[in-house]
Length: 575
Image (cartoon, rainbow, N blue to C red; front, side, top):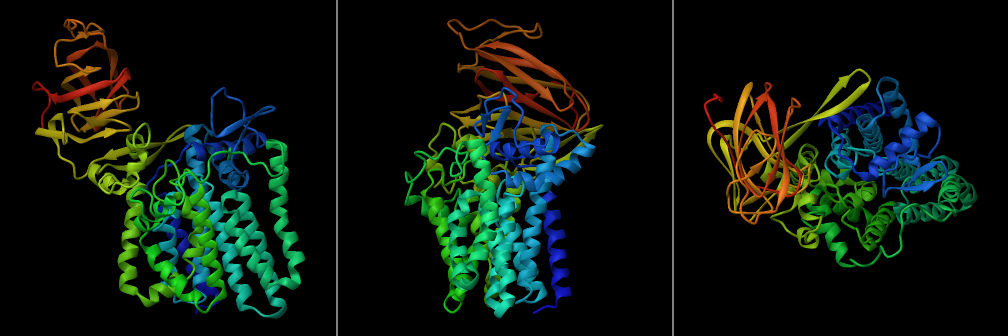
């Protein structure tokens, strides 16, 4: 048990530690969902409206309205983020990169506030170290971390739920008229959570019903307070979506197709399972169920978490789309983890092991995840099988590829961007890269490093397949000056014959009967580019001018590129 001053110190320490760690990877990990919310925050700052300007881009996360477009998602998270967008906009342009910076700062701040307030709540019934550790495990060892990497709706929901659940605890502890103030606070916070993300309405309804039952003498006041955020949402929906009860996302035909197997998926799937990505949740669940035997609040928190799990399981896209771990279960974490300090006190050794694993998994995602797993497994492939593959799970995939991504802010006048530095710390160096049935084979003198495939580039049938202009074979060399390469491959398949090359720099003749055409693009980080129009099989020698610590990207600007091997040739490169 701590004094008020002691609790405040713990809360402040939890905020600074979590905020620092959330920002430490230096990059935004967003999606189309987060981009729509970030654009709404920009519209509020720059134009004083929720309506986005019409840019002619077909965006599934927005809808046309008079005067522009509107995000299909609730406006409250964007509204909460406007102070950060205003602050960033004072110094930098809110271009796409500026939006990412502002969105990341906003999300990290909201999540850190939730962690801080939870630490303060824990400190009322646990030692300072236990309260701090439990709150940090909640924030850095769960999907609260991964969803704070861009402006998802979840950080706002977590903040309001932490406030609401903590207030419910104070309602249970207080007597007489002292219960009304925390009860009003709980009613408002739970309603704000539901207004931030409609998917949490079932969970919040369970908690509000419990509150009304406990405070039946004041249910009129509580209902009035809870109706304030609900009235805002109803008015917003009526204006932009045509009716108070109508929300932005389309819901027809999007429920029950995967149920009940989705329940197991949400909990145990190697690709999305809560207990796989967050093993400390096992101990949190034990603490909650143990407490529920003699605590009404624990019982209702358990019921609320179960309601959210079941509701998310009815959603056909229970896996949460492009995200790291069980994103759709993020919102139940405040309820599930509320009695984690008691569980850690009972099982300190097991808690330490499970906590370390949980934090390590989240940090792995923070420094490696870039949607490459989804591009290889979700788009046009057997995604259902991938969701249950331990060998190809996102965690195993990240460890196997070993690509670490560190963002570094780069400022040019009023323009700011997050430059991404990719490294393969434990990968082999070499001078020859070949595609084999078992993956990349790297051999020869260590002239190239940080060798990797990017975006949707993949190995198939002994080829490196680059089917999208963003796919790449990438590597780095510390040598400054000319780099002599030879690249062997094919557009559309072949058997390594001669090639027909454009641009006047390489020659050859096309294979008889070959009609597959494409454009090979070689880029360097220093912005020099070489482009070759190719037909069929090719064997391309070329020389690149490199800056110090430069990177090279081999891409297909058009067509499907199949690479067999790339190697450094000549004597221009020195180890």
